[in-house]
Length: 75
Image (tube, rainbow, N blue to C red; front, side, top):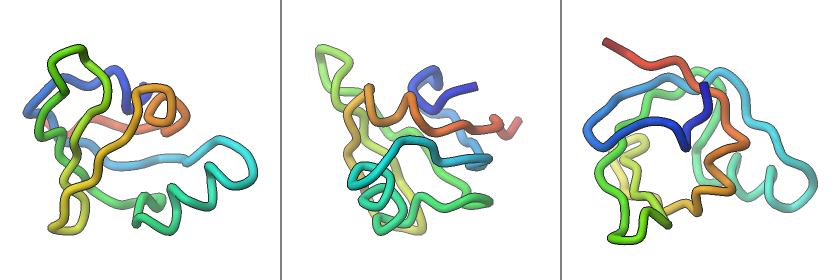
């Protein structure tokens, strides 16, 4: 499942960070690493961008960027 498919209020663990070049590097630098737990705080009114809580801080990602991150939902 991709991160962009999660709904508000869901938690997940990152399985893989895709992408290429500068986008992938930027995602990794923001703490979106394999094995990291995250929480989908909310989506903007038009569903782009989305706000996540990762390692205790807030991160905003475009839905297109989030679609490159594979996650496993936490029940």
